[in-house]
Picture 1 (cartoon, helix red, strand yellow):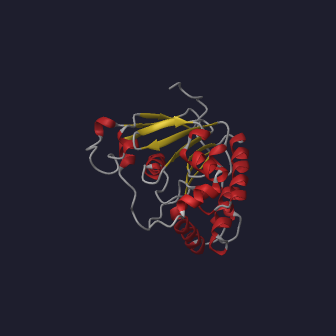
Picture 2 (spheres, rainbow, N blue to C red):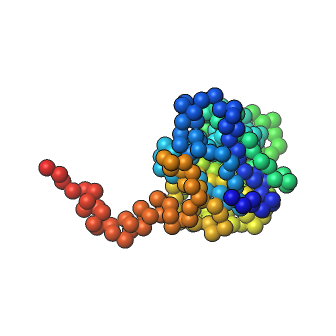
Picture 3 (cartoon, rainbow, N blue to C red):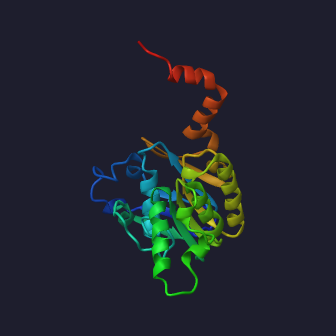
Length: 254
C-alpha cells in the first residue's frame, strides 16, 4: 500500500510477528490479528469496522495503550484502573509515528466511560483548588447528564484540536442526529490538525469522505469503501425492504 501523507501523528501500526509467543492463544488467534503485518493509517480518519468478535476493540485498545493512553480511556495523564481486562497485544506492536507531535490526545471507550466520569469527580474532590478537570468537559458533572449528553460533552468540550483521538464505538449512546453532529465536530477538529482512529458500527460515523475504512473479517483485514461495508449494505437492505425483511425475521415457524 502506498505510504500516506507524513502529516499524520501516527502513520502505521506493525505487528512484531517474530515476537508473538503463539498464534493459538488470545488475542493472536483472531484472524485480523493473525494476518496483521503493517496497517497504514490515514492522516485524517481511519475506521476499524467489522462484526462483533472480530477484534476491533482489541486492536484499537492495543494501539491506544502502546501510544500511552490508559486502557480504560481518558487523556495521557489518566492512570485509574477499575479492572485490568486489556490484552497483551500492545507489547507486540510497533507504532510508526509522524514527524509532528500532537498537543492533545484522548482515548474514548464507550464501555468504560462511566469509570472515567467517576475518576474525574474523585480527582476534582481531592483537588486543593484551581482549575477542575470537569471544566474541560463543559463544567457540568458527567453523571448528572444522560449517557448521550455526557458522551457529546466530551466530544464538544474536551477535544481541543491538534490532537490524536482514538475512539472505541463512540456512537454507543448517540442518536442519529447526534452522530451527524459528531461528524461536523470531527471536521472542525480535523481542520484544526487532528487525526482520528475510530472503531464503529455506525454507517453514519463511517461516512467522513476523506478517510480509510478497514473491515475486520474471519479472513483478516481488508480495505473497503463505505458502500462495501457489511453495516452499510445491511442497513440499506433493511430500509429499502423493511416489510419483506421483517416478515422473514418475525415469521412463525411450525
